[in-house]
Amino acid sequence: MTAKGQERSLVLGLAANFILIGAKLAAGILGASQAMLADALNSVLDVVAGAVAWVGWRISKRPPDANHHYGHQNAETVAALFVGLAIFATGGLIVRDVLSGISSGERAAPAAWTIIIAAAVIVTKTVLYIYTRSVARRTPSLVVSATATDHLMDVAATSGALFGLIGAQFGFPILDPIAAIWVALLILIHGVMILRKNTFVLLGGAPSDRTIAEICRTLSGVPGVMGLHRTKVRTVGSQLLVDTEILVDGALTVDEAHTISNRAGDAVLAAHRDVTDVVVHIEPHSARRAAEGANPLTPRQHDLWRRREENPTV
Image 1 (cartoon, rainbow, N blue to C red):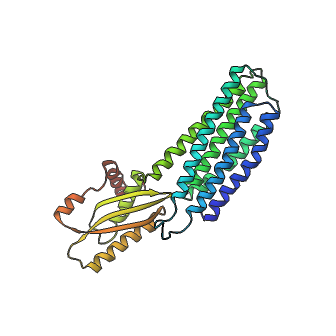
Image 2 (cartoon, rainbow, N blue to C red):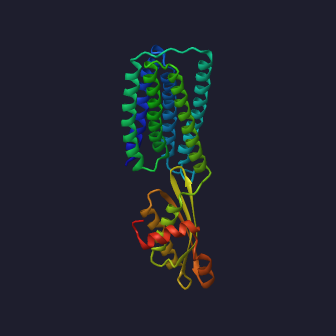
Image 3 (cartoon, rainbow, N blue to C red):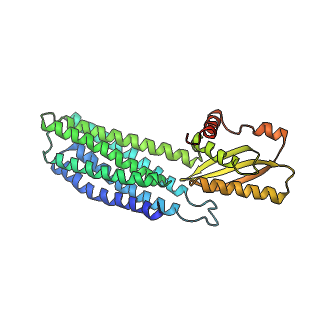
């Protein structure tokens, strides 16, 4: 998936949210539905979040420069953090307003036509989710992935609103504000998920044990690599940086050892699309080093690595 495809998915989601805002506001204000009004505020937030995400994505694609030697990938993470904070704040405001409306006793059944609006929104968002998810699966973009998740949360939120609208038509108007609270809770959960994930990335968190084990397996398969002493991986934006120490024959010349280290780095870059930089340190193989480097992984990572060695399809 090219960068153009990533950008297309973000712009499409942004444009769709603009259109849905008008429909949801009409259902919320003219149709007197608190649930749809809450969903409209959610779409307003989606537009703001989408714009921020798009800007962050554009910045993250800038190449390394004199002040940013590893590129600008974390711009994507910062943008996603802003989105998470905005989503969380909006969810809290919706809960406050809906609870205030319930306590005042102001309840009336929304207009029946609001059901059609809610159903149309669900269909639109489902299509957007399927498309954006397909893009996210083919690209390591945090923003595209977050946008896909946002579309799915919108489907769940509007489905709750639809339930409240239908219930209100059958003589239970209290279901409409209850559905609005459902929407708000989903928004809050979504905000927390985004904040958690991107804070971890911003702090340089390591990828999954499986990913680390696969990188070690790639390194160990390079001719001339006699073992691994230490392998560290950290996340920068949507990319991974690898720092590893390989064990080579101590009798090799510097030039020969350097050739092996280059092959090791190239092998990781070729096999793992998320890795953008590999630093390979050379250590002489010896009995002491062999003992120290026999298992550079955690027990779980080692188990995954062993299983992959026995069965490459695992």
